[in-house]
Length: 432
Image (tube, rainbow, N blue to C red; front, side, top):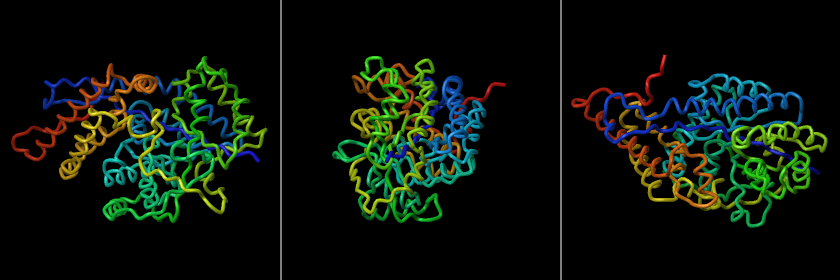
């Protein structure tokens, strides 16, 4: 019997920082983010990926009854849709209207809050769940953390929030030879009381899930598409849809989970590589072979095994880099200094009661800021360099630290209003 297939796509774009000079800190009218560059990048990727990929998938969803997909769309991406082009958001709404797309929950600001602040993490998940319901009419039941960051503790936190499923990387050192295509469960244990209180304070779902099921990324098959598809030195190049379907059909287990960035289609793998033709052929071939593409929640519901094995990730894993850990974001001194400095402001920001300062602080939490500060070498370093809009990790740190320093000054002004002027906007004013 053929396994199921679960296609999940991450959809996210950060707000990139502009070139903030130290002499500008504290000046009137200071804006942190490069609006023109962010708009240009969003529109470029919209034309290369989001719009053509959504149009293709809309056609496939309408024409193949056993074909479904899932998305995790960050809150900052939704905001960019509103700012830089509602055509992209409308195309995602059209996909939602088919009834064959599942939208997952995550942190609204695509942040590292799950490992830095449980209270902030819970609040961001609630914000994101509300945004998904407001935008697409769905209240998510499956959770996907930023960049598939996962641990035993996180799984229990997600369960307490009411989620019945969570996605994670099929990391070899945790699987220990077992099959990533089978669902797993976390070890049973009681969270510390402070964590439980923080989760209860912002639980996004009305009911507490009794159990939570883990779906693991099949990174070998996922990366064949996301990273190796256009690699002419790869022994399997060029990869055909038929060959890929054969690999899936020959896979053991319940469900082959293909998790990847949505920008794989058209941006990371350009249209002239044949990536769209590859995607277009898959549902037809899967239908011929009796392979069903299901959503994560359906894959979980159809798991009927009497015993679900334990996936024991006692330290954090992710889908990034060779290490599959947190080192892509918190692996060097400048990354940790930036993150520690930012989260040290949490109590002051929230105590200020100022919504603009809170939003600015949260925008600086977006994981991409720390990813750009990575100083790794070789293949992983090349990947970080490919995604970074800055000339070096140290330039990323310089811009971030200047923004953080200005945020501290704004907080001081908010605390001592007599000697300060009005708060300044996070973004520059829009051009008419």
